Length: 568
Image (tube, rainbow, N blue to C red; front, side, top):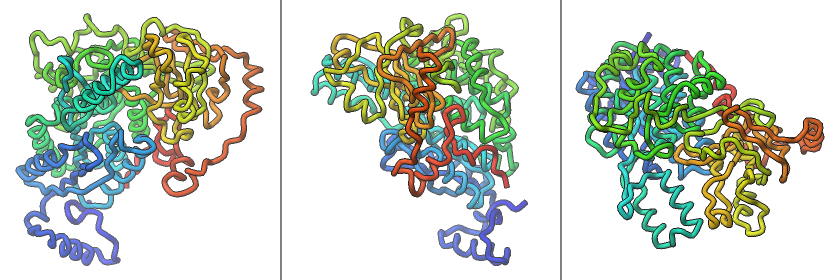
């Protein structure tokens, strides 16, 4: 099999001419024959002026190139799509699969013997790993790292759990315009991803647990020198993988490694988004995520990381306490320590040298957990036949068994227009319901599941309510919130049948979510539903592809034609 510059030649009907032409043009960049004859490590450049999470990518790239060249290989940097959570209309999830396709096709189209993908903001690492699994080229993943913490009036702040908490105070009239503006300038004091256990941090920890990144790489703060030393070391590892032609993702991503990722996700108080992404990644491989088994793990695996929104600390504190290796050491026999990593080491070897930090209280032991059960539970019932998820580690205990009256919003727009209406018929015991916010309905399954507390209730002191939807929620958010109701309302799921005043029962202990309306009445309502019609936004281009082929949350919201590996 060809390697280096000879790999994947453009087709002109004459292989010799194809190589001659390739070398002639690349020499225009000033490369020597010595450089061009070495193994090639491709490096994705996801820097963008629109993506502050990736603000350190140029420095990471320079460190990676140094590591590659010191190891005798040739680094080649190329751009891909970059997705920033708060700069992606209509939602970053809508673009995840596009980034995955872009990354996979550029890996296939260009000659490289190994690939380094650099990402961080919520949907970038999942997209890149989905691409890497499908392309199955030796891959090193480098997370960009979390921001450092901010401060306000003597209080430590973190984007974006404290964004939501303080915005809630502002809505309730507890903070004035001047103070919220001051907070706005202090929540994100450096480049990098959110420094709480949001989706970005969750995916970085999962990546390390899967063995696709170097030890400690999930938690090193984005501006720290250690982040760039880790990047240089990643370049060395990628160069070695390019020469050895492995290990490939297909060799590392086993049933055991995917189980390890699920254990870590539960133990860190991870983002519900992480479950969708891990499911999509697994569906690109021969393995699958079984939601029933995931829920069972949730009953067995305690939350050990004291980090917002499930706890009190921030990512830099997790790092200084020993990071993911120390967490896996505490998890003990819940982790399959024989799983292999990109370094050639097993997790057992990595865990054996995990740092022990006397007095740290971020990474708890199994006999002193933050929560006795894992972060997430899978709910089922007549409202969610194929499942829904709740991050009960960040919920109000008193609401985990609750029956209330439905207050229904038909879309994100409807919610925006009516939720703060003083005449809205709503009280604190009601259940707020949002529909048409799923993969097809929104489109792109926005992070709208964190429905705001109606202003008149917030100003009366209400901090949490049961909220349910077919949408997603940021991992930085908190509250008693049921998400990913599947199938979604836009494809005729039971959520489409709910009416104002219906009673809904949530029972997390029993893992149930039910609409307390008899089956005959529901069938009558179903018969009255208008037939689905493709919306105007979905009639051309990527939007058409998305609408026609997007899968539901229980299958990872990938495109239906992207399942399985697409090996040559």
